Length: 315
Image (cartoon, rainbow, N blue to C red; front, side, top):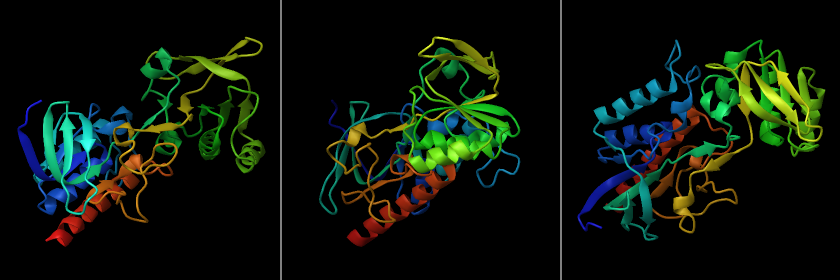
């Protein structure tokens, strides 16, 4: 490993709406931020074909184009955006301490502040047909994409509170919502189950799994199988919403930063401060409630402001 060490004021790890917004604010504060994008430049949003709910896009946009806009804006103010993966961290626990980060297992960076915006990855079923149709009718976010299925029939896969919440949200938009539950019961809270059962246009199919998502370029239906009887049924739908949870991209920080029992980073009060001074977390890596591009961007702004104030207090 080369011992050529680069010293910077602000390192941003991750390149979704949180990371890019943090970069915009940090650059405007003359913190000369350096961003490492991770292997998925632009984050989860680049898998979304249409974005209709982010302020400022009157006619909508697509996820990749929106991330390119944010990237260009961050670069215009002086952010250095680099494609690379942070592979190891040695974060200081002292105020004013230097945080050491290894990129691509070779490059050493020492940063006064670190903003973590590595996000969370939606869990999918792993079917070839499902993966092929992500962005073509397969989604992991009803509040992001439900609008496009207004008046149509859709399927929700899952059995927990997330699936119940997604289904009830979609029931206000869609003609019919079918929930596919792998077991013979739902794991959702009783309150959420009651809400589902009282909603007329929601049907729950138990012991049912998706064998295949039907359609060439867009979703045309699903082939479902009853895992008890082995009977297969084709259900005609235009949207498939996978609601089986998210995995926070926080493995790099295990044993280093405080996190909850599911791996989301814990921040202090309403701030983006982690348990280590000079280290901040923004976006879906610390938010398992909202998971929206606009809320991620908001916490990215907060993280940059928190970092700027931290550096200001050291002077």
